[in-house]
Amino acid sequence: MPNILEARDLAKYFGGVRALDGVTISVPERSIVGLIGPNGSGKTTLFNVVTGFYEPTRGEVLLKNNSGSMERIDGLNPNEVFLKGVVRTFQVPRLFTSLTVLENVLVTPPVQIGEKVLDAPFKSRWEKQERELAKKAVGLLKKFGMEKYVYSRITELSVAHIKLLETIRGLMTSAKLYLLDEPAAGVDYGVARELFNYIRGLREEGLTFLIVEHRLDVLMDYVDYVYVLHNGKLLSEGKPSEVVNDPKVIEAYIGG
Ligand SMILES: Nc1ncnc2c1ncn2[C@@H]1O[C@H](COP(=O)(O)OP(=O)(O)O)[C@@H](O)[C@H]1O
Ligand SMILES: [Mg+2]
Image (cartoon, rainbow, N blue to C red; front, side, top):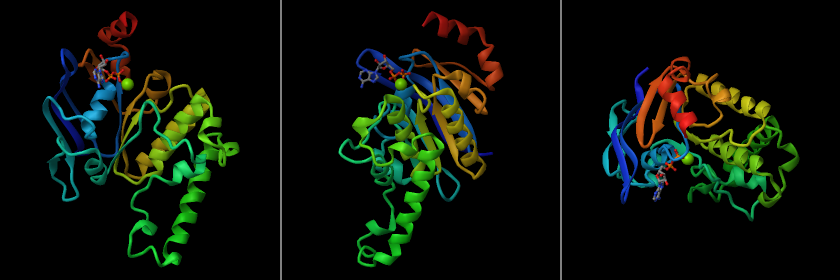
């Protein structure tokens, strides 16, 4: 498969801190790629640079556009990157605390028909779509054990459920490439596997995923390829079985 995303020699410095320092990665279309590494190795920073939250200090980010060529997206702002078809979730969830669980899931997709000014007066056009989205949202909440909380407020949720909700919200948003930052953090093992099974199903439908995850026991069963960051640089890369047996990787995880 051709690449949908490429980062070339990507660097991001914060003063003297080299959060990313010359990282090159490729994400093929219709793949699930893992991005792992000890705390502080630069994973979230890479997401922030790819999705326009930070400008890189050096390097390029390229995304496959609709005509099939690779187009530079570094320098675009987060909304522009989103409109190109890239959705990301946050390691620390960003939810609307005044809204219910269901409302949080439904508020995201920005191109819902009802929000287009010209279509808004024609209620019948968007009512059906709203109902379908709500049905899909409830289905996902149920699948991940959150059916009890559909009408709860965010403040009533556990940390694990808040994390799941952040991911469900991202997955409800149409995109071609999803960047998920630790979707299984704190989530029960069984539910985490449900989540990754669902992600695998979306991949079969043609979507692409770059996933940061600490839960290697779950992640490694689902990814096609893994990149390992350490101190802002690529330490290793390969198929899951190659990476988990790489002495450099084992050392980095044990050494912290
Ligand atoms: N906005 C920032 N300002 C200063 N330093 C930052 C900022 N964001 C990240 N860092 C630093 O960059 C390094 C990588 O952080 P991060 O990308 O969050 O790592 P990871 O997600 O792999 O745990 C850390 O040393 C972190 O403290
Ligand atoms: Mg992080």
